[in-house]
Structures are given as C-alpha cells and as structure tokens.
Length: 197
Image (cartoon, rainbow, N blue to C red; front, side):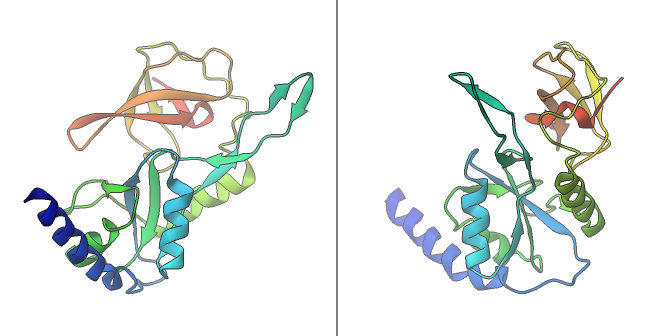
C-alpha cells in the first residue's frame, strides 16, 4: 500500500515539472533547494537540461600532494548541499522540483521558502569567480570549537553561528552550526567569510 502511494506521488510531482520551467523575471529572487551532499552538480545539470535556471557556485579547492607531486586544486562546490534555482514560485513548481533525483526539499519549507535576492546571488557568483572563497585564501581569523562567529558574506550573510571544528591555520574551511528556521543546521563554510564575535 505505501509503495503505491509513493509511486502515485512521484507521478504527480513529475507532472508538475513544467511549472518549474515558467521563467521568472531577470531580477526575481532565487529559491534554495537542499540536495544530497556531493550531488549538487548532478542536480544543477538535471535542472538545466529540463530548461530550469539553476546554478551552483564553485571555488578552487585544496592543493594536494601525492608522492611528492603537487596536484593542482580542483573546482569544488562552495555551498555543500545547496543548489540555487529561479522560477516563478508556486506549489506546483516546488512539487515538480521534488521529483528530481537527489533533491531533499526547499530551504525554509513549501509555504515560505528562503528566497535570495538576485543582487546577492550575483555578488556570490562574482566573489566565487574572483577567488574570494577559495580554500587556500588566507584569513586573519582563527577559531576554536564553541566560538561564536558572524557569517559576513555568502548565502547566509548576517547570521551568527557556533564553530564546531577548530581552525588555527588561517585558511580552509570550518564546520559551523547555524540557527536557521528554529533549528541548528551544521554547514561547512570558508574561514575567509567569517568574523569572530
């Protein structure tokens, strides 16, 4: 019985996919989809192939060494677990979004999704392109577990978070716990965008 219900829901969600392709204005806000970690690029590609405007900001990752050889940094996802997309918001559009493989839900929920204005997304993309979020970018900030920090840039700019993993190297990433929508959410962020409180 539950399997039949799941299959029926999947068919309904797939039928709602065309609502996602309804274009929003050039300055319309972006919706933040939560996706399985490591599948951000796959989801972006699937959405783009379905004629849905979607982006995943990337940055230069860590330089690695293997057998005394330097392996150049590769591009990696800036916001692990999130994909930005833009469409005309409707319940049908969100239902269609949930039909894509690896999409978990929408940040903020169906009724009042977390929307990011176009200028902020453009700013994030420009700074990512300019190397502002790169792993090797040096920062004066050094944090210990339990420290309070403010997120200065990016999708969650202005929010206060608690550091979960210490970082005294002055570069790289930090796992922080952000209070979003009434619950603590762990997030991996570049040290370069944090300000110690």
